[in-house]
Image (cartoon, rainbow, N blue to C red):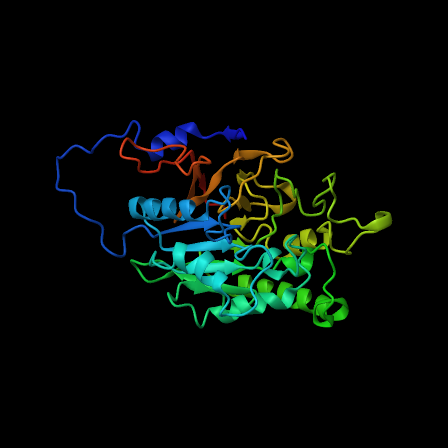
Length: 381
């Protein structure tokens, strides 16, 4: 497979890498800033669709991507990480003692020394390897694992939740992380469990919407970051919310006789959910589901919100329609993640990518990973 790569913001990349910089004239001693004057900063890894473990498939590079994460965190700093769902392939786990927790989380990430805030994906809520999202009770095992994770790094206190993130040097809340449970809103098979269909499902979706509206309204955090498995926009196979998997072959939304398999299959309800809760309120929306790397530009229907799709944590696919949505950057046929830095007035994101043999697309002579793309955007009010 050949990578599809689109890059803008070269000047920002050169600036971030030090091009054209100069030192101040040493006319006066340069004093370090006080704690009150120091600029606040948070750094984190955004990655999704990770949960293959070391399953023997040569095209599943979860452990190699994890090694690159360690190197990037050592070079640039990481305060936490987010997992954008499909944490346990192919059909979730069957209890908190399922060995997949060890293979797909503790071994690759448990020793990194940072918390991983986790969202659920369709494969986490599935009864079959196709990841139909029709066994939502399975997701509760991942919630319960928060209490028994040997490393303590796994963080999923509820199926959906809000988490205040504290800036480490000054101890102030600097970001609010909003973790959605997107599969029940956008599945393509109906769940046979009565607790996850009909009026009960409607009440769950409404309760989730009310929760996030209340959390956002009550938060004074300067940055608001949303995390879910299913994207609002994507140039990959699954596409945009409201038209998921249209023209896919085979079409997972359509059953025998052309009958839709679920009322929510195309994601229309999920699109409306995001527009009523997250859009223009979150500064950044991180998702997975498509196994590529995208930083997509804000959409008119979603206000200021930036979009990162980071679903190449273990698997890889091609970009399907590079012109579907305007992008700062997009790359398929690769494995990798985004490193994100939040400062008071700007957001920086850098994409890191691997070749199929597990070597970095871009690296120093000493084989330290370098980004394939880096860009800065100003914080919007």
